Length: 370
Ligand SMILES: [Zn+2]
Image 1: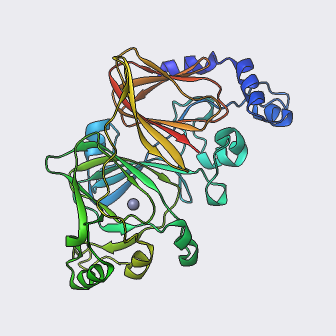
Image 2: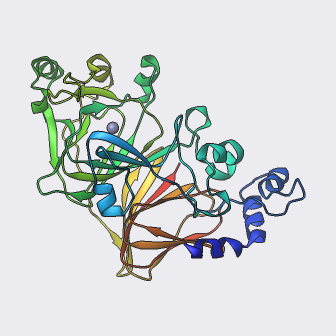
């Protein structure tokens, strides 16, 4: 971690100033941003940011997030989710303590003070919140079947749309996802089976292994099966309608609350047997990639790097690099920081030149926020 401090103390601030100017930030904002207005020089600049994870206890969770990624989990109940980048009320990420001059600052503070430098041309979520939510999920048991409302239904039901992507980081043999409907299932049949507790028969099941990816637009009914560790990149929203909980009861012996009416109103009944993302890579022996998502909200690529390979990110674009396996270094001007598997690095849009260097063979998810 000493490399972090060394990297920051050598940061080339003049370069930063130029990049702010090129990003179209007004002179006053540049001086505010660089801390010039009170006679301090170069107090605050943005640079690649890693946040402290926020762990969530879930009855379906486990300890895989610690086993696979070395994250120190609290003792006690099973942990189902590690929220890696979140700007939700009550769940606001803080920059890690090894993370340079902004250590301990929250993403909320960054968005309140530097939203333009953070976002560039990306759109904030409702209330000026950071647009993306990033999580690692550890499902030892299957989750409930659920759906998020599409934009045209969300408003009338008082919720928010939510588009998401799942990248399978680790899968037990026989693990599967549930997404969309089996071909030919009608709404009438679906509703009848829902009332009979047999609706599970209607869902499309997809066997998965590590590296598989599924895109989940709002309106696509879905559930995570047991034995899966997943990197989830999603729209910053928290509206989930639970359709079916496998006839289970919660810790209190009662079934968990379901939202059948809202679910049925949100579901796309023409969404039959969606497919995993195609495994078509392009590149060379050192570095290859494949597109995972092309959406209005975000573009995501999987990047496979051999030791020593480097990958330049886009200039002046809000991006996130999520390390699935291996070790990377992130470098922007003279800022350098190590990234290990399970870490998500936010690259503010104001940065002109950021590069990822593979310290070992590595797999990364590269998110460009639109
Ligand atoms: Zn979901």
